[in-house]
Structures are given as structure tokens and as C-alpha cells.
Length: 250
Image 1 (cartoon, rainbow, N blue to C red):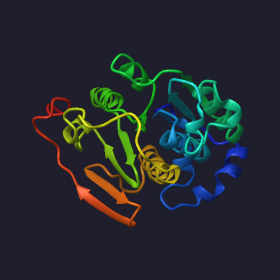
Image 2 (image 1 turned 60 degrees about the horizontal axis):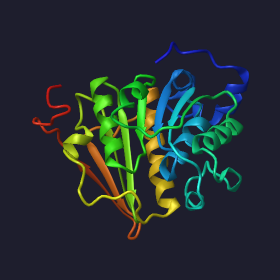
Image 3 (image 1 turned 60 degrees about the vertical axis):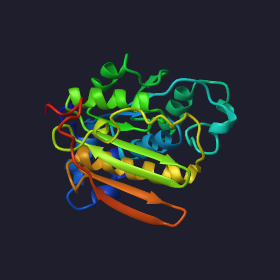
């Protein structure tokens, strides 16, 4: 993380209400301003994560998402608009986030995370929020995060179910502890409501804010699962696998 910069008068006015939060204050806001976050995909999850981090005053976002906006994106990818159909998603995301927070620095990467680029992308940031739908991307980010000792907030959903956990290398299980291999039945497209994506995305953004500003308790070593069909929430303790091929030697 960069040296904590001073806040301008405009920033103090913008973030006044959240700086009233106990244990956060101006010191926490300065930490957010100095921080950089990688958001993998700006879809149903990542759009809301990026929006909330930009609104909270995180100084720099690296957005990685390939491809152009299509009609089926519009019911849940809240940084995409009808006018952006057929154009790169990251361009729409950058434009919308700059409208919200013109002070925000954005690195727009028209690529999905892969084993080939994960190390390079993770190297640019202090923290990762994993919003990717494919396990190939999620496991590549996890491996890079563990290798570089950087925290990662992992968010996922399916149908009306969602889960979230925080990975702190050396302290908590990594994603490969939970999924040593890609689940064979998982596929790219699946049933989901945008409201489900947005709910878990807000939790993920708050986890990222707490980690960056160093206050509150994180979900490291814990997994929250929720079923919005029955409004059932559970918090489970999860353990590291000592034989994990990614983090077992830490």
C-alpha cells in the first residue's frame, strides 16, 4: 500500500458520514485512498463490488473483464448500460465509476484472469476481490494471491444461494483448500438474480474495506453461506488443509 495521503476538503465532505464510524475515522479513509484493489470481472458481483469500493473512496481499482456488453448482462451487471451494448465491458465500467468518483484511478484490463496473467495483475494491488464465475480464474487468482501473500475476498453465488470467505495467506484456508480441483459439474452459465449478486457483492466490498482500513473482524477462516429462498444464513468455521498444494507450505 502507498504512503497514506492527506484528504482534500472535497474528500472530507464526500466521506464525512462513513468517517463517523468508530475505529475507522479519517485514518481509515486515508488508508482507503492509498489502497489498490483488483476486481476480477465486472459482472453481477464485480459491478457492485467496484461501485461500492469507488463510492467508499478506494484510490485505485484494477478491473479485469474481457468481452463486450450483451443484453443478458443488463439485468445484473449494474455498470453496464443499454448504450454500451456491443462495446467492451471494462470501458462501460470505467465510465460509470468515473461519473461516481472522478478522483478514482482505474486500470481497465480487457482480459479475464488466467494462469498467464494472474501474477501480473495481483502484483499491481494490495487486495483482490474474486468475482469470477469460472474456477480456472478463481484458482489462478488464489495461487497468485498466496504466492504474493495478499488477501483475497472470495464471493460466489448460484440461483438464490451465495457464499463469501476471506483468504489471508498463512492464516486462513485458501480457495484450493476448499476446492483442490475445479468441480466437474460447474458450468459458465447458471441461474441467478441480480439482487443475489448484489447482496453478496456488498458483503464482499465491506470485507475489503475492513481489511484495507484494518478495523472490525474479517471472515478469515470462516465461510458465510446464505439461501435467500428461505432467508437462511450460516457462518461456518473452515480449516486449512496441510496437504494443500497451494498454501500447505506456508
